[in-house]
Length: 404
Image (cartoon, rainbow, N blue to C red; front, side, top):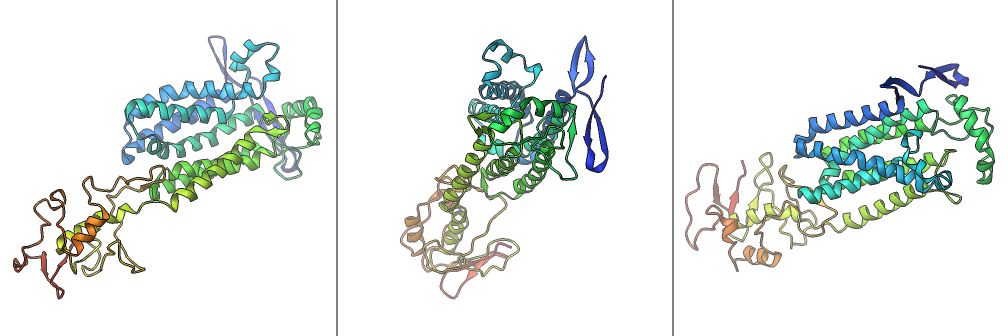
């Protein structure tokens, strides 16, 4: 095992690194590959440990990863080769030799996402819900995997005088060999001067956003929110950091990953704003229907939960009161920005809004599917004696319902 060194001159730090960690049957096992493998193992371990809390089956996670890992590697290589074709034009077969390096993370993400949608269709799963669960682990793995770039002395930026500027033999050699190409796109480089450790910037950014996504996943308001958070968070950081790098994949004079990041962020912001303002508020209707059916259609008042007073008036969805309030029960599913129809929380036989209006004003009765023998209003002129903790007459001729 031979070592090279990465130096941080301003702080007097010298870090030994090695590309080959050990050998197996005469084959070099690269440090980069081991770091990537460990990040994937951690991602799978955490997914299996916490999947049950979010209704994700362990077998589905394992089966998905069996397909996602090779698909991600293949797509990462294809992405890299497409935008580095000049390196393979004379020898296309070299594109198959991934041991010489050349994998692009955006290609891997595209491959993983494509696998999610295909796998979910075959297994009849909800792809967006699966992605909401999984993308925090993906970003965690991306943050860890960037340290493989440090070992390889790659993914670094332009010159800097900041205290954490770094340099090394591989860095100096790369910059000296590519100084003319960089000058052609307006990047002036001194190969002997320290450079930005952009691998470190991206690693820290990914880990920070991953922590935020774990918190968002517990508090999300609609399906797809965590996925949108991943795309915006990672895309925004990558767009900025990519502008500092000297080894970007280029499309003419454009940094392709930076352009893709900006497009992703803009598209996701537009989607989020467009759908958020158009979400149907069906989560209010189940509680409303129950309250109106129990109240006999006129003057019914209901509490919103066991911790609330029983006399809070629920909004009926047609009044013009500005402060209608409904309970957000823990069993209700969040709204879905990818589905402008009914939310998951809406009962299967829930009546239309015109039916609810007639129910409130005594012109119709609730469907049998909603009544279920418990919510049927008493016949006209009759009043059953209130049971303990049940219902009692109200001043308006309706009933008051305590949710206890």
